[in-house]
Length: 215
View 1 (tube, rainbow, N blue to C red):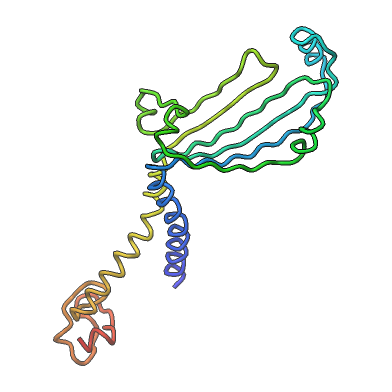
View 2 (view 1 turned 135 degrees about the vertical axis):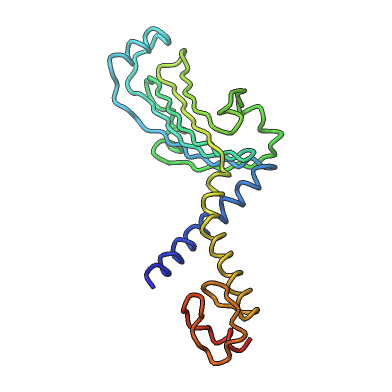
């Protein structure tokens, strides 16, 4: 009994993951979906930041403006997870920017055709790139601290793995239904149509189902 309930729980959880992942995978063939979160905060000033401000802007830095974001995007059966961080020495915040963006996380969503998103996805020519795996880090050398990281992997293996349990459950249900209709033993498939008195299956010893005896 415990095994049966555990199997049902695994099937339900797998199905709950499989359905949205499968929809996401199919949709990504035609549409690139991207969701990202940005937030700006203030970091304490450092001697390195002061030196950078003097060398590259000729001003006295009073703070470090930090903008950080995370993004997730789907494209042609792939999922990309990204993170970027930009830190910039500043003398002060712009009043309008500070009021609207500093310590006010911004969520944004964009959907566009894959043909318009092709240039933004740098698909390599290596083996792992061709099957959907890639990882990269980009650092802007002309900035004080500007780093972007991204990892990409295919969606279809997730859909395939989460489809195993529901598929096996569907197979068991179809087999049970077929055996019930044919008057066969539910456990081993032995023909019980010549067993009108409901005796145990002579092959495996299982008691026949009521529906089996009526068939």
